[in-house]
Amino acid sequence: MLREDACDLVVEKYYQAIYRYCVHCLCGDVDAAEVCTQDVFLTLIEKQEKLNPDDNIRGWLYACADRITKDYLKRTARHRARCVSLASITNVQDPNALIDKSSPIVWNILNDDEYALMEAYYSMAHGDREALADQLGITPAQLYRKIRAIRKKIQNS
Image (cartoon, rainbow, N blue to C red; front, side, top):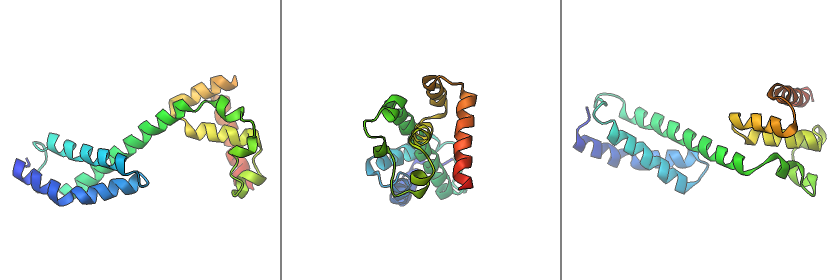
């Protein structure tokens, strides 16, 4: 059990390091890193009764920060995926606007439809991929087969 004064010392000692770790995990998003860092230390305070001062508190903090930042990234990715529909990807006036022309894989191997499908597939959370299959009028199994075929096409090139 961590005493309250020991918990305060842990916060003082590790707050900046955990904050920098969160900034790194979140690709420089300082606002999100601040929220995640606060969540880490709120979790510490909530669990102080169960934590042993002899345990590796530093390791526990980093593991907690890792878990919280990954959860944050998953939540924001799902939110972004809901905001982007397949129609907005495939019905673009200039399909070449979606293609990263600096990427030889995309430019030389994938056609516009394959690129749009891969972009839509990887921008969505797992559950939303079934909705993508419905939008395309195919089953999820057929969608997965198409994705595997595109991956194989990339690997073979």
